[in-house]
Image 1 (cartoon, each protein chain N blue to C red):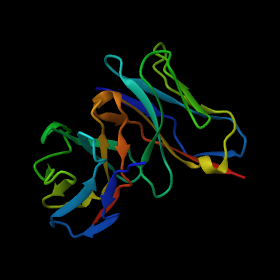
Image 2: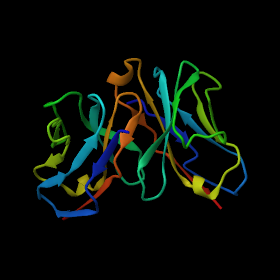
Image 3: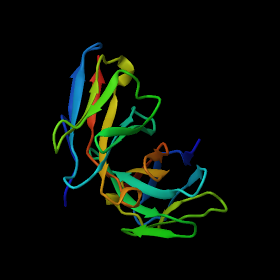
Image 4: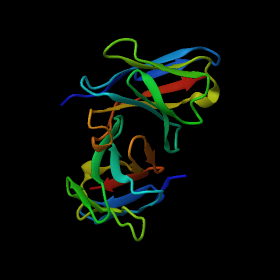
Length: 109
Length: 115
């Protein structure tokens, strides 16, 4: 069945460092791909999405490109802030979503 | 911005007891979902609900689970006889009338602890 695999966490970075969180997927068909973020004590919030191959989703300085040839949707940000500390979930789906295991990001000042 | 709200934020119950988790989806949304996240594990799909019936459910959603939309605003998840392994964070989500083209909006979750 469809699945999503994310890089293991936790990831610890200094402020202004470059961030990459890897995400690969297995799917039949051409699902939409998503990144969700969960700040401490809060629910899941949609960060960005891409609905077809080569689409780039972007929001709040984060970007991810839907790569069909490598079945990947890696999340990147050029310069992280302390406020970016959260758990990040890669997901795929149309109706229901299938989530990766989440990657905890901790950004130190 | 409209939000999905869930109550309570934390529920503690004894094994074998019934529990009802409550959700108020965004008011003009038509598709409703429950997910759960056992501590340290993936967020897992439980059930989707549309037009007053279950549209899809996972293997986790066995006879101990049920969902209901008792009125125009609430969407509930009932666990009939809780087990220790039901301890998890339960998330409610909804999406608008565009269906798959509209994003899922999640609530803040209910942490269920079964003792």
